[in-house]
Length: 118
Picture 1 (cartoon, rainbow, N blue to C red):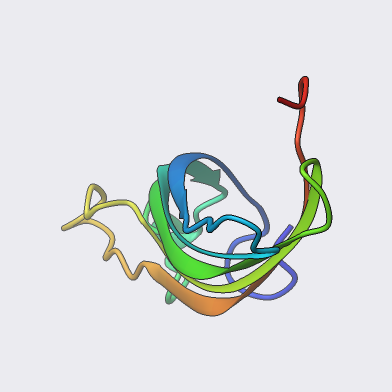
Picture 2: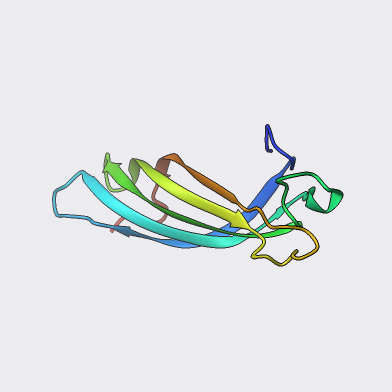
């Protein structure tokens, strides 16, 4: 749900990679990550709402980095900073302008490893 803005909802599927810089016997592991995907929103741009998305289909990507603290091989927490861009890649133009959305902010995570520990 979007608490404030032209649209009311946004849902996305994203896939990406994360490179952990793991060193032997370190509990803290820095990382960088990149993700991308597609999303859906209830676009209000075609209805004439200023700064709204031009169509329901969107594309997005995230670039970020941070650190992960390992409590043990299965459990860890992470914090970092990320940049996210959402737009429809100008597919609605020239009928409706693509303003896009750019967000920069903190990330926090609780990580649980699945499967058998090696």
